[in-house]
Image 1 (tube, rainbow, N blue to C red):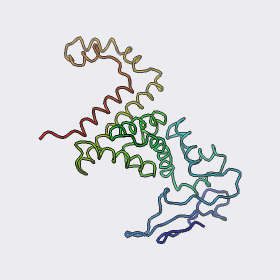
Image 2 (spheres, one colour):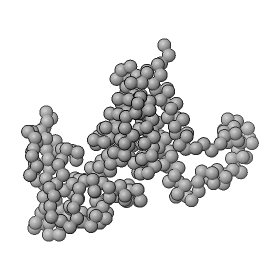
Image 3 (cartoon, rainbow, N blue to C red):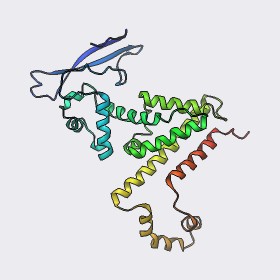
Image 4 (cartoon, one colour):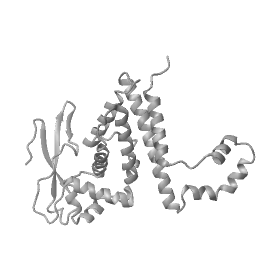
Length: 273
């Protein structure tokens, strides 16, 4: 039995789903912590791994998360379920509930495993280089695991690797000129995160659209060329016409970097007085 800190306690909760579970219910251990607001169930990050046991297939949260990520990479988040993961691992679904209580915790583990990749960017020699490295590593991770972009922008991710990335980013931005207090830092982080989420979702959506329709952006534009030409010849859209006629197809990575540096220039400069 794991050693508990003072204020922590355990309780057993019956689970269902096994054959003959009405006669012989299985139990999973729930860990609680006493707080000023009562007793709360410990998060997946605070609960100890289940004790190893003799079984043909050893499990761990890391192994479960890695399997879930492979499924999500191949089939998207809709292709991830406890039952499908269990099948991939060659175990019964109920074994997984010893490690995660629900799908929300499973997603937390998956997301934090991706943040572990992002954290590899590490600290650079100065604040701007650190932010650039983290954000470009985030883009790399989102393009490798497209489902990751779907989970950005909601509530903050609070796993240990996500917190480490957040700490590195916030600490770097706090050193930037123009960031002179906590309010400036909050605004800077908000603007940076808004850019990251919007840019990554747009790029991932375009990749998915190209796959699902069988046409890339250039092919789509060529198909609509005659219609667009007729509309532009009306003279009602002169600026759009300039973009279409004079503009070129920009490289996605170069454009991401250019826009990122523009955002950093804006959010870290001293405001006009």
